[in-house]
Length: 363
Image (cartoon, rainbow, N blue to C red; front, side, top):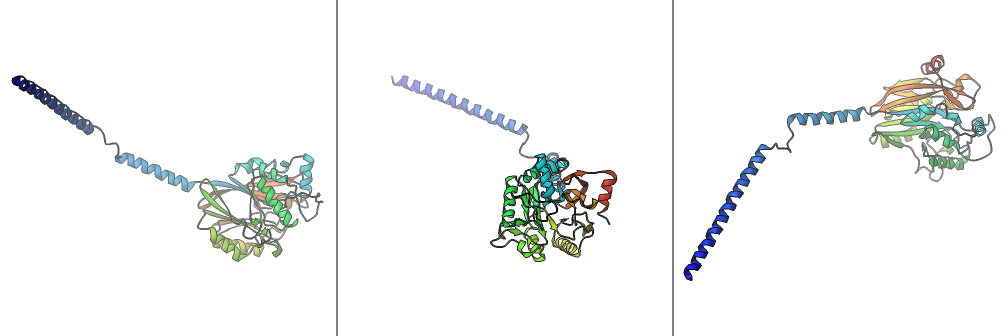
């Protein structure tokens, strides 16, 4: 019996040894196979030189595209929606009527901006030649439908209907998703600058006007930004390190005079000295001469864009400008001259009529 047990144990040990040897050689072969496969495979987490060059070139292209990125700003002068202009829109039952002929160009721009020369508030009709303006609040719908995004508010008619007229103007512009610059419900809430970022380009808009002290915003009174050089310096310094471009709106000058005043020139030059990139002016109701100062454009007055004045051809002529902007400034300007028809409706002109208006920029 003892002999049988010894034989069985020997058999079991032999089987165990055979299994161990089989497992050992199989695992060894598998390891060799895996090593062979790994050695024959490319190392995928290391980029070869050609691939690295391609990636670098793509990154350079993206950087250059960013640097060359351009946007467009369409800017015009005075838009006054009161008196005969309001009557025309009511007769047509169409508050987009006045801007219907220029809509395609306005809305084609990335941003479109104008000076709003009349507060938006309900009230009695304003008679022709009256110098206090009030526009039907529904006029804001027409501005938005035409493609305008920003209204510069500082001007001599901003408070024709007092604080209430100004506050209502804020309200109706807001309801139509139109932003404004250069005014506020009080001094601490003054929207000046208005900062916009379009296609990665940051622009600070600042707006100012000449005017009496009582038009300015205070701690407890709505108002506008006046043309004060100390305030201009403070405003520009507060944003020039945060944005790519600074654009100034200036409502100033002598009405119906085609040459800028010393006050206009001094303010515009100071703004550029401080870091502004472009100056856009309005108020004189006629197109004034322009200037290039330190390689920056100054348009002292773009004239009327929507107005019921008709005492001369000069006041019916205006200029819209499509500015092409990069991070480095203005890269191109396209002029869009207009003549106002039907006492309210700007129409783009070409040929000799256009040349006559554009020529006013130079003399």
